[in-house]
Each structure stands twice: as structure tokens, then as C-alpha cells.
Length: 375
Length: 119
Image 1 (spheres, each protein chain N blue to C red):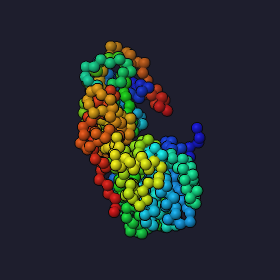
Image 2: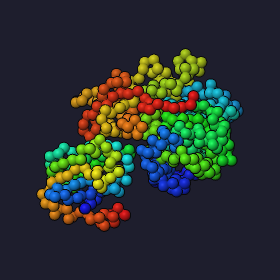
Image 3: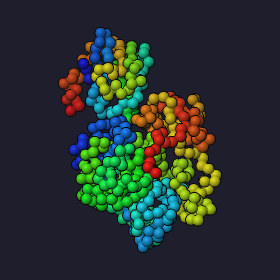
């Protein structure tokens, strides 16, 4: 096995008492001294600091941002050419079968695009972008010299404004270059917890300074991957490789909101991305299954892999849980998964098979918690 | 008190054995969010899965340490699973079992041996 990579914050994690685990080829903190449950609640009540430096930070450069955006639209079914300067948008790479190769954030930074991809997909994403973009005169460059921190929670604005008040002007999905601890940081007002907050790309030699400056605030605790997962699950957000993958289409995954009208049938830049025919047809015909929220009625968490049935006895599975666990904020088990389309309406009573028993669960609206984005 | 390699503690109380998990095990599990207890009166064999514990991280089973009969379960734990983290070797016992021969307990580790076992 290859040796695990470390982020620029590795030694700080150890100093803070983190329990380190292998994740996507990196040695990452799964939890600190507070433990997953309290870290989760702290993030929702005050602010949590996450090291997400394992994710891939990629600059797409070319003659003009318009040209770069149009090139990326050949891989991503999102209105990127219409993305204003200093704005960010969620998207995904599709494949010829209409499945999802990875999901990503795309930012227009004036003369280039800055994208952030999942750690586990970095290599494949770079290959995909080189093959798809270089012939169009666009060069993707994976950055190896920047860390990525996320500061999330209701106190995030006050905390970060303590280092530079300019961040108060930012709204949800704005991006800006902001000086923090003497370094040029690329800040976006976004995250993956359902809370207001920021993601901060910082030069690696300033990453520890920035993390320490943020942790010095009484409201901030370091938060590990364990709580990151329960936070994003409660927020109804997909985890690539679990809730979405190469076999799930955007329509099945209930991600049609991310495909703007201009890229759909009848739009000015309709199609033109891998799997467009299948995906656009599904907008009209509907998919045979859908990603839905699931609320187990009892206290037992239903985790990834639990099979879902329409009846309490007999029959064949009509779906499967793709992410699930205990929601510290809801105080109940929460899950998401795919179910056959005729069982996908919120309120539908279904059963999850756990340890040989069928336990009641209900199709539920997501998110499970109220999002507090600063729009 | 005796200890198993499955990180259970066993305490003799009259003619029954009280079973719980060690503080070390509770810490490794993380925050416990769900406990499923057996029915009182169930006859169990050594290594039967008798209790399900779920933490924020994962599900795990508690095995019957010996052959015997479950005579009492700590029902309030099902409503307050976090007690397993708060007081694993006290209030958060799981079940009491009756076994044929209490001398079978001699085969388990004592506290010093368990401390060596977990390093």
C-alpha cells in the first residue's frame, strides 16, 4: 500500500489530540477530544474548523474565462458561462451513461476558474479534464502548495471577520481574495454542513498560522471527518461514492436543480455534455428511482447498505440506504437512499431490513435541519 | 471483577453475573446512540450475539461470555444509550445472567491482566 499523504496541518491535528485515520490516501483527523457527537453540535451552535486539504484544488487557465467556462461546460451540465465573476456554483462531471464521475465546486475568479474536487477522485478528474479541456486550449493545474480549511457554523462570520472584516460583505456562494494572517487567501462563502460558513484556500506555509488564529477564538473547535459526515447527512448533501456515483444519474439523484434551464432541452446551450441524451430525456420521462430522505421510526440507525422493502414481510427490495446514521441535531436516526419512483413520495411508509428484522421508516423531505446560508 | 477479550466486564452479584463493557471499549466505540437488549428469560450460548450497540461510528455486538440464562436486562439504557459513555463500568450494565457454575469465571482475565491486554 502506498504511504499515506499528510496535509500541512498534520502536526497540528496530533497536537490537538486528533484520532487519525486513512481517508482517500491521506492521514486525516476523524475526531478530536470532544468526540463526534459534541463536535457536530458545536458546529451547529457556534463554529467548527475542518481541514479539507485532501480535496483537489484545480486552476483552469486559458485565453479568457469565457473560453474556459465554455470548455468546462463540455464536461459539466451546468451554466458555467453564465457564472458571474466572484461567484461559485455546484456541479458534477457526467459520463456517457448519464452517471456522475465526481461532484465539484466551480468558482469564477475573474481570469480563470478555480474548482475543488473530491480527494478520492483527484487523479481521474485530472485525466478527465486534461482529455476534455486541453484540446480546447484550457489547461488544468492541480495545486500542491495550498491547504483548504472550512470554517462552518453560525459564529463563522464573526470569527473570520475578526481576521478581516471584508468577509462580512460576502453572500452565500460569493468568492473573493482576502488577506488573512498576511497571506492571500481564496475565500468562498460556502461549505458542506448546511450551516453558513466559509471555505478558505491558503498557501500551505501559512495554513497552520491561519488555523491557530481561528482556533484561538472561543467559539471555534477543530472538527473531524466523523462530524463532517453527520453534518452533511443532516443537511441532505450527497457524499460522492455513496449517494452518487458513476451509475446514478442527476435526475435519479434529485440534483436537477444544479442543471440550469440553459443546459436543458430547449435552452440556448442545451446538452453538449457526456450522457446529455440520456439525462435530458430523463427530465421528460422521469427516472425509475429517486434519491430520497429516510427517517427510521425507531432509534436504530440504518446505515449504508440497508435494504428497503415496501412490505413488512416478503417481497423483494425496492431500494437501499446509501448514507445513514444518527443525527446529533435531530436526535434521531437519519438516512438517505434510493427507492423505486412509485415509493418516493414524502410520507411513504417503508421498511428497512436490519439484522434480519424489518423496521419502519418513512420517506422524508431533506434537509433534515434548516439550512442557514447567508443569501 | 473479570474481563473478557471482547472488552466485557463480568461482576458476580449473588448467584448471577452482571455484564457490561469496559471504559476502554466505550471510549473506542465513541458516542453510543442505540442499545438493543435481549429478552429476559432467554437462554444463550457462549458467543451468541445478545446486545447490539450502535455508536455514531458503527454497530457492534456484545457476545454472551458463557452459556446461561438472561435473568434481567437494564431496560433504561435503551432510552438513554449515552449512559454507556458516561458510566460504562457502573450504571450502564447490560444484562444479568445465571450460569451453571460460577467457577467458570476463573478462566477470564483479572483487572491487571486486562490492563496488559489493552496495552
